[in-house]
Amino acid sequence: MIRVIHLADDGTEVAAIEVDDFTIEVLYSGIADMLRAAIDDRPALALRDELPRGERQRREKILTRIRA
Image (cartoon, rainbow, N blue to C red):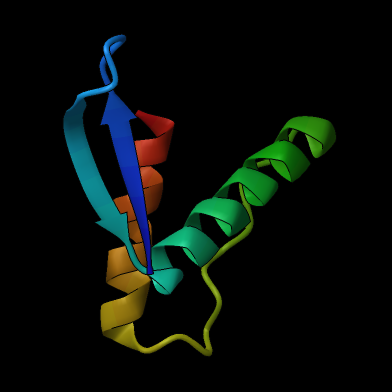
């Protein structure tokens, strides 16, 4: 888990979020999928079947936010 902090110009904390390992993995894989799709000019790769249903749904939710 990592914590991302947004600081104001004077150094005060404006906002902070905590990001878990799964979200980071999904973000990186989502960016990689989008780059491959841009290079190949095809849609992004399908979801991995080995992920449980809940994790697939969570992954799709995160990727939807990235693409928005």
